[in-house]
Amino acid sequence: MIRYTGVNHLAMVTGDMDSTIRYWRDLLGMRLIAGLGDPGYRHYFFEISEHDMIAFFEWPDVSPVEEKEHGRRVSGRIAFDHVSFGVEAKEMLLELKDRIDAAGFWVSEVIDHGFIHSVYTFDPNGIPIEFSWNIQEVDIHLNPAMLDSDPSAISREGAGPQPGIWPEVQRATALSEYRPYPGQGNQFFLRKKNS
Image 1 (cartoon, rainbow, N blue to C red):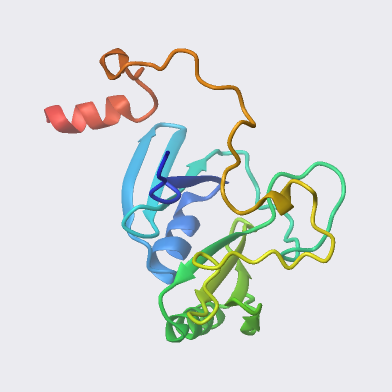
Image 2 (image 1 turned 90 degrees about the vertical axis):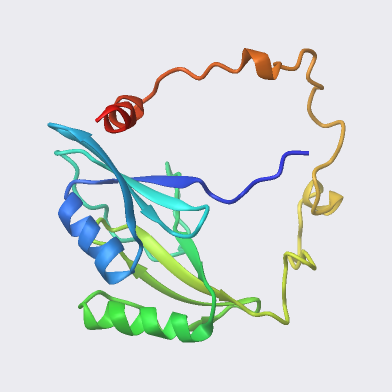
């Protein structure tokens, strides 16, 4: 069984890396832990937690997206609604709310969703963000809850992966065959290692 460690990184886009750094590093407090780049190209990574990052590509002809209310239904092409970051304590939720408000960004009041409390905002790129604190008494990781009044048939099969749905692997790749191809960033870290 595959065990995930979290979200390695979310890859977002900005047209202004400096304002993105000011927001994510200086306002939200996420360390800038890697910066890749050459003239006309940047890819920067911010640390969310020990295992999780958010990254931004800086592309020169990009402008912020139009702000869309978090969770508001839309039609047509869409791939993303918002991203939610967990915080350890409700005091931290209030601290973030106050910091974002003091910086002049719109931020919602605290919303009670029954299993989490959240505040909502937008970064300088128009990316919709939620910050959430888990209510310990209602831990859906320990006790998954399907509260949909009309759940789909497949969702009623349960919380865990269902066996026999996908074809079995016919030939597993041996660890001795593990040969990653050089990707973006490879040359930057090799250069750093050899300096």
